Length: 255
Image (cartoon, rainbow, N blue to C red):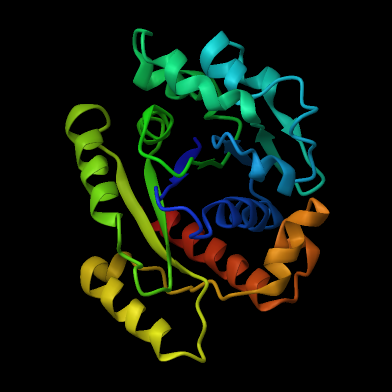
């Protein structure tokens, strides 16, 4: 039975897609069956796994708006990760979802038949708290919140936590925070340590032990259509995503 995890933060530039792509590839490299849902109209996760987002014939848009069987939209990649891709078509989905019945559960219903086919389903959410993110949270067992190691790190997180509580109260009572992931960490600066201390004050044990560093290799990888863990497995960024995968696997075994 797949564990479904949304990777979400309405604040952009926090390493959300980088985490979705590299964590997916890291988990897959350990022999697990992984499906990544690109649920961001920018389609960056699709491109980072080597697919041409403007050339894919079937996308997550077709699944949630046109009722396409989710299996028909799954694409294999060279990195042992399977993906339901996205492109700019998804940008209009929120407007099209608005008048639909059960609009908050379109993704959940579409993924239900896939749960026995995968060990983990990861959802790369858009940088907003609209109907797409609501669909993702309703389809998920838990959420990973990436937070950048910067001065305004916690800005907007309160709103995300409020949304999570609303989802739990009204739609998905079992939704949990899987963990808070510190990204773009620079050990050479005092700021990084201060931000982590502040985040731990707010989230405590939910902060993952693994931090994701600023990494040129992670930044370069998408331009080659590759996850960082495949582009340069020995780089510190790749090694830390592999460590994060181990942390999540261990946590999943205990739960």
